[in-house]
Length: 261
Ligand SMILES: CC(C)(COP(=O)(O)OP(=O)(O)OC[C@H]1O[C@@H](n2cnc3c(N)ncnc32)[C@H](O)[C@@H]1OP(=O)(O)O)[C@@H](O)C(=O)NCCC(=O)NCCS
Image 1 (cartoon, protein in one colour):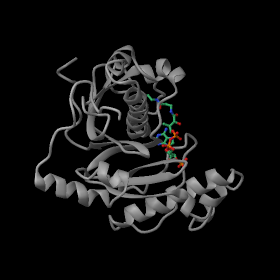
Image 2 (cartoon, helix red, strand yellow; image 1 turned 90 degrees about the horizontal axis):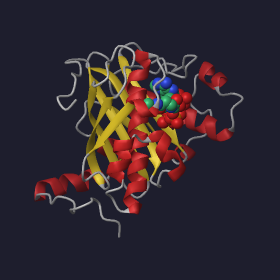
Image 3 (cartoon, helix red, strand yellow; image 1 turned 30 degrees about the horizontal axis):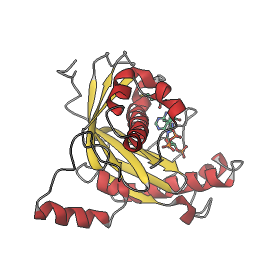
Image 4 (cartoon, helix red, strand yellow; image 1 turned 180 degrees about the vertical axis):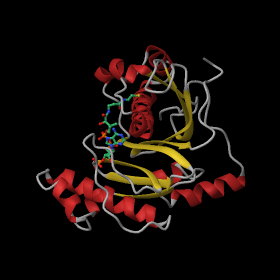
């Protein structure tokens, strides 16, 4: 068995928390992950969706020449986004993307889509409450060791070295996923590419199992944000199938520079 932390087991929970945990097990990984956030989530295996079914004509046209798996994932993302924003009272509308692949959400909605082979999710919130949402799903397999140096900063690799090998690979995947999430939450505002080395992800010590929090801190300026700017809370969930991350940035107060910097 792979220990969850370098030094200790998972914390014990009270009876009420255990009940909540069982209830949440009935839901999908993103519903569990973002249970405390003011978002609506819809998620499923995109292979359950017929490619093109339920798309508006312009959406169908956007992926008309794509391979079947891409059309299926694109379809699932659009269907789920409309399901999620229907919970906010927003009617069904086309969700087209701009030339940088960023979806043009309805004006009253902030949202994010993530998909991979076997899972797809959309998370949305009212634009009056939330300024950015980033979600990401990855298979719960170790990050390819050859990618560690490109994705993880030296201090992240030093932290990973304290974990057993089996947990370290998954946590490297979690760092990758968290960086994708924070990038997707902010890119629509910033519109500048950010290298993986420019963002530091601080994982919680118990991150290798269950749901935990992370904090992202810029190590270089990014658009309007100075180096040292932190964003939190990020959420990380790891189960047998998926590594999922998410971050929901409120409209106010704006994130402030971390005291740790
Ligand atoms: C943008 C990016 C993060 C998306 O990666 P991906 O592997 O396609 O991720 P997912 O499947 O989880 O998400 C894809 C969805 O995200 C949305 N999306 C794509 N680009 C986006 C962007 N720049 N900003 C916000 N959302 C974006 C789209 O809805 C897309 O789905 P769709 O094309 O079906 O509409 C990735 O392509 C990328 O460019 N990464 C490099 C930059 C980076 O991550 N830096 C990290 C610095 S800390």
